[in-house]
Length: 187
Image (cartoon, rainbow, N blue to C red; front, side, top):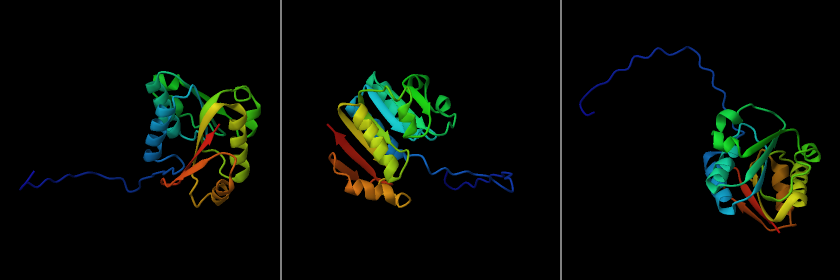
C-alpha cells in the first residue's frame, strides 16, 4: 500500500537446516512428461529412478487424465514418499518396485511386464546401466515405444552423454532442456 510503512517483527532461529535435493526432475521436465504421456496415451509405462517421486507424479497425473494406463516405477531406494506425493487416483496407477536395475528386470513384476509404450529412464547414468535399461525396454515394448532419458547433457554424467551420442539403434532427438532430455522412438 502506498505511503504506509509496515514493520514485521519475526523471531528467527539462529540456525536453519535446509536439505536441497537436486536429484529430482525440474518442473519444466515434469510438465513435459505430463504432456508427452498425455499425447502418447500409453497403457503400460515404465520409469527407472523413482527417487522422491516428482517424475512419477507427472507421469501418473497424465495417466489419470488419459483415463487409462499403468506405471511401473523402479528405484534401489524406498523414499516412502509416493503415498504422500500422489493423489489417491494417481497412486492407483502406480506399481512401485524397490530394486536396482538391471537386476530388478530379472524378477517379477518387471520380468513379466510386456507392452511398454512409454519409458522414462532416470536410473543409472553410466553406459552399462543406460544400455541395460534400453535393452530391457526394447525386449518388453509394444510395437512402438517412446523412451525419454533424463540428464543427457548433464556434465555430472559424461559417460551417459557419450554413450547416447554414439547410440544408433533407433532414431534419437536430444532436447536442450535444463539437464538434457533425449527422446528415442523404438519401432
